[in-house]
Length: 195
Image (cartoon, rainbow, N blue to C red):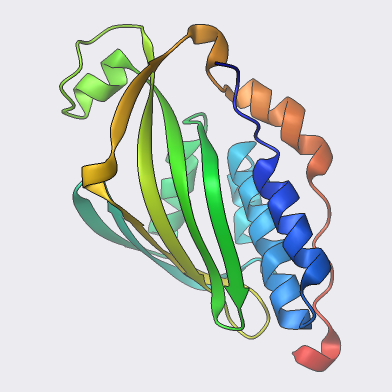
């Protein structure tokens, strides 16, 4: 096994951007692309720029059997707490419409045995590394300026797997910063005629 390719999502989004004809859909994809890169590189405050996200986003999260709704400042706190908790995305199916962005993918969360045991998983507490693999379906509604209104995130608990991995294959925040920072580009200005 080798380290996962963190550039697969921006490359897939770039391909969709090249083929999207509608300005709103292109802009939504640009926002999603930038969001992914900023989140994984720990630059969470930039997610809340006024051209990226609405002032009061609402997140509906169903993960690992728990269901929670986050609004406003709670969403900011969520992203702040996620810095350094790394994941990679595999087998993505991505699509966009005027209403927003959809993705069906396998998320691999990089966790130690201690972290998994603390969350109640039947894993012996240890410094050994694992990927917790969740099949996740996401819908991100966007407004008419292409900004994120929120996220609907749902995983299929029955499909979850916990797989041991070698330490050398763990994705770190340093890996993400080194690999993804060069891919971050300014968000294009939303076409004035569309506002």
